[in-house]
Image (tube, rainbow, N blue to C red; front, side, top):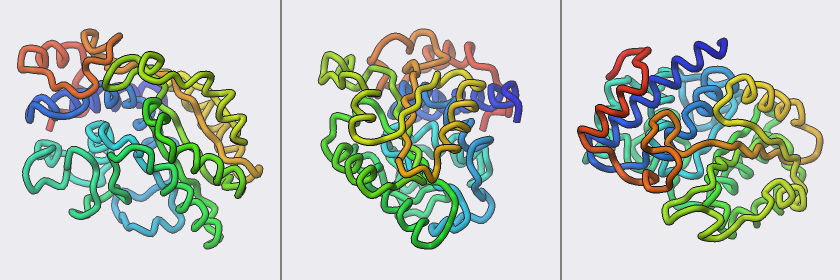
Length: 280
């Protein structure tokens, strides 16, 4: 796809996000909006996957794990728009007995979901195990994972990072959503991460950086990351984003991390986001 096609899909994904969280007055719009461009690229351009014949084994397919599971609205929207499940099912988000729980779960067997997530810090460990399994099975495909920057305050992340480098898990590409904000405020005020690039390099990873809202830059960076597969090092992409991207009153603050817009705010947000694929 060209970048205009990807922009078009991402705009609809952002509309889905704000409508989903507003409808149930619950959810996490800020980080979801910030990662809409990246996940749109990954599923519609970057990964080799099969939306129409989903299975848990993922043999011969790239695999994605969402470690920061609270941004489930963006993932659900992208999965639905790619054809993993019917788009109208997005209207069931966070409702009783829905397959679209607030944090992704596997118990209801929603296509596209291979790990229950939301307890932060665990996704990298799962991704590493999956990547090692692919190596044992001589499966040349790639494992991708996404993390929040606030999530990096979890110790398990760094245990996993050490393990991956020591064991040369080089079929793994982790991406960090580096928006500088978390639920309680700016990351630097809550618990500073220092230089992420230097930190990941010190842990033995190959480090790339990219603009998470520029499709050309996303394409070039993720393509470069893919070319580093098999070189003996795990790969991490530090992706700069803006929380609430696309909705002006949600940008520049941490306050929309986990707050749903009311009806008036929803109308304002939808007025800023172009409907391109049709609302559910």
